[in-house]
Amino acid sequence: MAAEERSLWRRMIERIRETSWAIDANDGIIATAGLLQGFAGAGAGDRLLMYTAIGAMLAGGLSAGGAKWAEVAAEREAQLTVAREEAEEIEADPAGELAELAAHWESRGLSPELAHEVAQQLTARDALAAQLDAEHGLEEVMGAAAPWWAGVETAIAFMIGAAVPLLITFLAPVAVETWAILAAVVASLALTSLVAAGVGRLSALRMLIRSLAVGLGTMGISYLAGMAFF
Image (tube, rainbow, N blue to C red; front, side, top):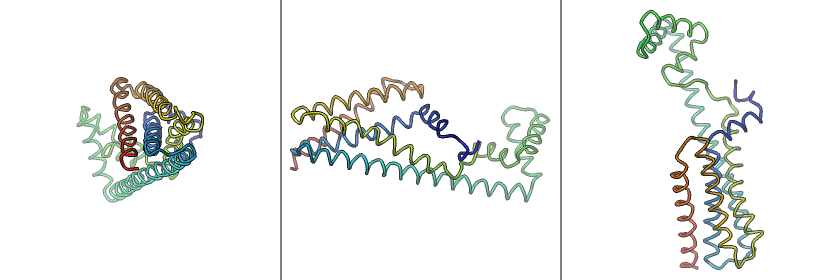
């Protein structure tokens, strides 16, 4: 199914089943919390911290989304180039491409006769798709909307993560704000890391340790920098 034809609901479900959304959310949590801790270390008041959190959420989300859009757009352009080159090769030498496809399946363990039959059937169905899969591991060329979807999804995930320290800044009294942000960040990173580990079938402990190390390290260094330079 082409990317343009996928429903919003289906894309959301597919996104949830991946681990990348949790990584993007963690980036939002860590980047915003780190910035807030730096300003807090410099003695910033509630209003400045609030403006800082909002700015970090919006700028960070747009930046992360834009970077993801550019990355996926470049990947799609590379796929289109490969597809165009393969189409030209098939048109110029269909017999040679069929032989290459048969050799591919033979290298995968099929007998020469069966490999040739499989290559013929796949070529008859969709010659270009068969060559792209065999030679480049490319099952489907991205649709035109794929880069935009990737950018929007990344931006939303980042902003959701950034909203955690933002809400603490808005709700917590200034006297406990730093510790409240720290506790919220630790809890949020733990939750997203454990969920991502379960979805990706990764080591929950290792992912949790990495996330907390980066998050707490970023916040600590930012706080000390704020105290030292302001």
